[in-house]
Image (cartoon, rainbow, N blue to C red; front, top):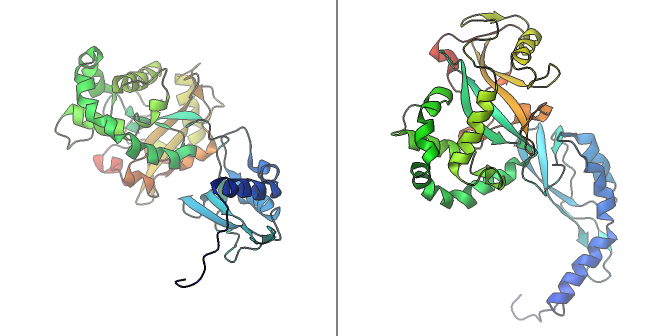
Length: 338
């Protein structure tokens, strides 16, 4: 306050950093937090976090979280530990409170990479091919990082049209874009539509330096993955308007049609729209290794995965398809409600 003598807590910048490191070492933080480390891309139950949190007692830290899916999934943004400056003893933080208002903890296996797998999203159509490409997005685990990437890399989009038009592959693949990709109405040009797709998917995947160094690299990579699958001129034993009584049988038919790329025990995800108490097939998700680009079993957490567009970041209206879902036959049954 004005008129009072100001006390310098640190002699110099080096003293500040030495103090911070010394206090950090008293927490034995790495040992305690190791309970959250694992090798697989899976969400942790809240019990795992409770065990780690209790190990910091009785002087509890303040826990700041961010929510990825309402009360279902939360991630840790920071832990704040409090110390008495005079004797450097740890003390309880005034606002410390352990939040149990989430069921699963989002904690990636490592932050040394930006995605563990890629997800090819295919959308239902009413004419052949009956499933088309929406996009290929990075794994949900680094969702928070990816959102910041979009703003950081948006300047790269300024060169999008120039790069596409001067890439000899573009003219050769225009027909494939129109045949294999979902191209929303409303855009003035094909390039405008592709730019929007790239902004919220390929732009984030620029980290795949050896494979994606320009926009066409992304579109070619995704299109080739799609073409390696069975053609979607049929609906695996069903037709438009049919009711699929057995989800298990439908999954089996999809895997069989794509054998050996897809194995029967691999988890692929089927999303449905719910309209007037009925489910309608809306989307199929197939996961790929970021390292090998081979199909892998999708982690269960990918059922919460969303695209990076603002309207998709909100809780989606899609739900996992159950026995008795229907194959759409009208445009209103395909309406995107997310």
